[in-house]
Image (cartoon, rainbow, N blue to C red; front, side, top):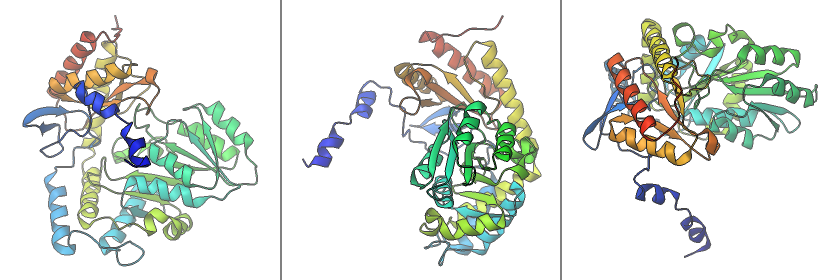
Length: 399
């Protein structure tokens, strides 16, 4: 066994969880991504998906993808820089820029690549990236690749953000990067105060709307739109793997900024372009989102319904106001056990455990789709309540 194998062989945590019957990852889904899925031949209620508007199996979206394959084939066989740009890419970029309220936009092959490429290419060694401690991993990886100075601030702590801004050389570029909706705990960034501080300290702002588009704002236009601050935000990022029912991502901003990114972001230049099917699926999903605002309204109404139910039953759910509802367990092993027992009961949820969060902050991530029925919501909440009680996880019901 060589040295690399020796090192890797010491990693046995997954095997231990598998032996205990509580391993929660890589569960094989045998059906389309919907409010119910089939795993090992068994129907399971899906509360672990990011398909917020329930469009992944919409007949129009699937038809658009099929038609794109018939016209363009299955892939582009190259990067956007060279032979991989389709007329459908250009058309979608124009529509996404308009949707996000910006002058221009470009499409990447994944959302992760957007943050990786954009954040790493914009700033120099004497500049500053200032970021929330609960930002998504893709933002953190982009920051690691950037030569700029990295300054982290405590989650949603605006006094801490201001202290970081005060540390910066006023003559250098400062970029504040933040999730619009935080992906694990579902709370919103304090964008009004972030924009106020950015203006005061002459900083730029980038907002990751991965979990905001389709969820917040007019016709699902996101957190920036929700707060009426689109014009105050310099860069707006989005992914296609949530409300847009495909895979990929985009960044929207001024023509000057997008032109620079288009010619400098390495994850864009050196990656194959977004597939024809995914591009068409996103375009059709965007069309449906704008045509049917009742989908966003239904998602918001079901979010309010579940938040009220969980609060009345005494669940600790933090500050969420979105379809991402964290159910805090605050114990690593119990979080795994809750996930396993709920799966046995026919409810699919995702565990969030250390090292992704501190052991005392572990939680179950319960996420909603506009297409969930109220009967499905009630069934899941009943089963979750029963499992929490069975495992002696504290609940504090409201009087």
